[in-house]
Amino acid sequence: MYYLVYSSTASVGLSEEDLRDILQNSYLRNSNANLTGMLLYCNGKFLQVLEGKKEDVHALYYHINKDPRHKDLTVLLEGTIPQRNFKDWSMGFKAIDEATARSITGYEDIDQFFTSHPVSNSSHPALIFLTLFYKKNYSDHLQYL
Image (cartoon, rainbow, N blue to C red; front, top):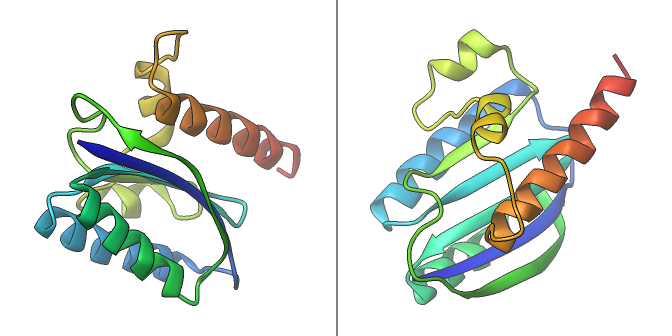
């Protein structure tokens, strides 16, 4: 099993509709390609972990790199893992209301995920990156409320 973690910045402001579209299309595409992972979006920043066959992960990353909604894509980690860290692909985001988000297939409550998946010294680096991204951006978000 191969994994890749990347970060990017939204090139334009994303509306709730844009985020729903990304979630729905990504869920279908990733399911069909047997890719799993997690995509986080917060304060105009993305962090995504992709897991699957190496060629499928690279094909999706190439597709994302061509997406005009992303800029400054950077691969942070990549390598092999003995098994998937994420059994289902999911996307965490805070920009839409909870009721709407829960109605979309593939949505995972981001607060619940990080509460139920605490990191430790033995955690996979991808989970550590996601947790740090979440904590940093969530605390920044709270400062503006």
